Image 1 (spheres, rainbow, N blue to C red):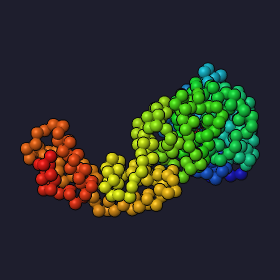
Image 2 (tube, rainbow, N blue to C red):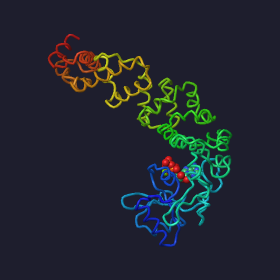
Image 3 (cartoon, rainbow, N blue to C red):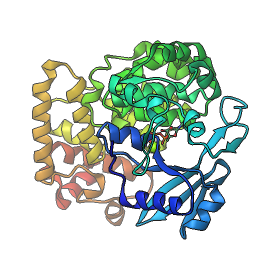
Image 4 (tube, rainbow, N blue to C red):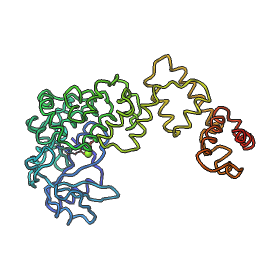
Amino acid sequence: MKIQVPEAAGRIIEQLNTHGFEAYVVGGCVRDSLLFRTPEDWDITTSAKPEQVKEIFSRTVDTGIQHGTVTVLMDGGTYEVTTYRIDGEYEDGRHPKSVEFTGNLTEDLKRRDFTINAMAYSDREGLVDAFHGRQDLEEKIIRCVGNAKDRFMEDALRILRAIRFSAQLGFEIEEETKMAIRGIAPNMAKVSKERIQVELNKLLLSDHPQRIRAVYDNGIAPYISEHFHAAGRRMGETGTLKLLPAQKHMRWSGFLRYEKPEEAVLILRDLKMDNETISHVKTLVTLWKQEIPADKPVIRKVMSGLSPELFKDLLCFKKVFCRESCQETLKQVERYAEEIIKDGDCIRLKDMAVSGRELIEAGRKPGPGIGAVLDVLFEEVLKNPECNKREYLMNLAEKL
Ligand code: ATP
Ligand code: MG
């Protein structure tokens, strides 16, 4: 059993060993390597205490020293090195009251959430798999380390993590673990919305975004938020979500496409989503049901209200969710949109041949009236791009 550990991570392990400490790569990177997936990051677990880690490496950052984590900078990469630890009692289903360092790797692996996340590896020792993670990987099973109910009571976020991993990996949740999820679901109310958002994002961006249903089917949704729960009743077909590009705003819009735009916004606000994503979702949820005829003036008008990227996203979205009978029109709309861009048709107010300042210079009174005139001119230009000439527009403005 050999895992290709990045050179820098291997050197960190070796140096810790040289100083008499144990060290392994651990958790997600071991799981992903065994699945031939590319790990996002390589975490290292060690018997060395944080102070000792800091003495050994010249460049370190105190990332979470109270939890035993020091970030080591090596070869331009960063590696989180965490001391073996036993998590103390969880006070409130959120934070362990205390963490206790230990010299025993198995104790550290025991505190981890799922068997597939509880394996360690080093070139020296090979795979350390005290909880049969490898077998569960082969059988495609998500199973808690130890008693599932206890583990979810310690930290209810693990409930969502179980569903998120099942969506990322296409695994099933083992029966006892599933029962425990249903039983402990109410504890999700104690988990911070930010942490919940991270998990829901990963779930929706995964290869199996339709598993968002499991959040509802297992009775978790009411404890995420009232608005989120209500969305379950209007959720459309979820099998098509994976046809959308794996981008946050696209997958969330797909999931919330039957919501009223204001409802979608409330759901995302509850989850402390960033404003840019909220704004894009609101736009897509508002616009996707509106028909765009294969008519250049209308297409220009739609384009004028959106960034080029978001207009593309809208067409992509409509392709995935609109009826078969609309698809021909959509293709024509796409071709027209390409022409509009290629021909350089004016679709932005700022690209119009006449500006507010010029109207004022020509003698028009400054004030809100200017905006109204510009709007009329712009409508004209959207209808007919040849009209985007200074003289023509100035003439037209005089008549208004
Ligand atoms: P990802 O691909 O999302 O990074 P990961 O498995 O690396 O997946 P992280 O959140 O980065 O997940 O956590 C790293 C490791 O820490 C996990 O593999 C697991 O062993 C442990 N872990 C993380 N969160 C928890 C938790 N809430 N409870 C118990 N163990 C956890
Ligand atoms: Mg990770």
